[in-house]
Image (cartoon, rainbow, N blue to C red; front, side):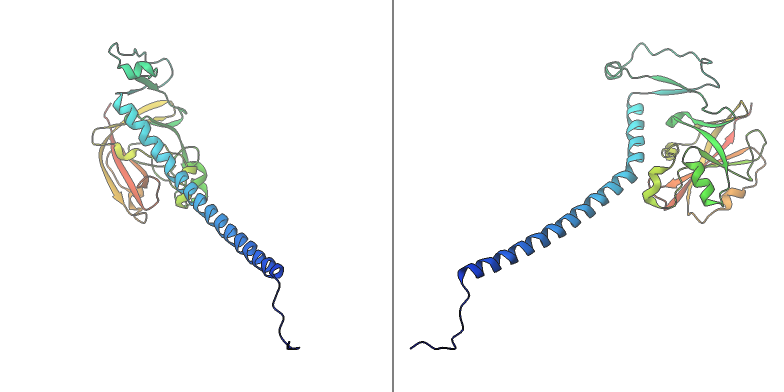
Length: 250
């Protein structure tokens, strides 16, 4: 005898439809989470590569130049120095048509810096080190000369800085000319061109300091003294690397 109030069981069609709805909902949820995760992953990788690419590029360039014994020669203007490629050029250098000797001339004779050892060459522009928005604008295209410090030939303290930033992920936005500054050692040459005249300096030492140590800006000296500053380590804003040089007597 059948019970009149017996509960009807759902049909197979309804069960199948219900399972399909659950499966579809779960699929789209997983797909959404996976898409977001992949986006965050690739965004992070992009930011890391964007930050480290400039210093890595400069390191590779320096390594190749050093391995193939590339030499940089400084001249005040194009054609002033005649160079001849060495006869005993290596097979690799010949194969890739590598220039063993390259002449560096100032991009702006009115104010320019050339560092032969690392192949650095950049114009120099005045910037207030206390005005972040101003000096960040300058550092996108040049090395900054700290206003209030002396100019070449004046016999005082000259302070130049480059590769500074507001946030580490913006490091690659700024001039990479000082990325290899840490390669400099005692005796290495730094050339400044100012108002068409060349001034030669020799490195006497280096120092790593905290960003808060700004007393080096107001250094007192009885001889013409040059300080170069960059961020340290390359690609970060954690510390500051200072390179000290004095002018070579004429």
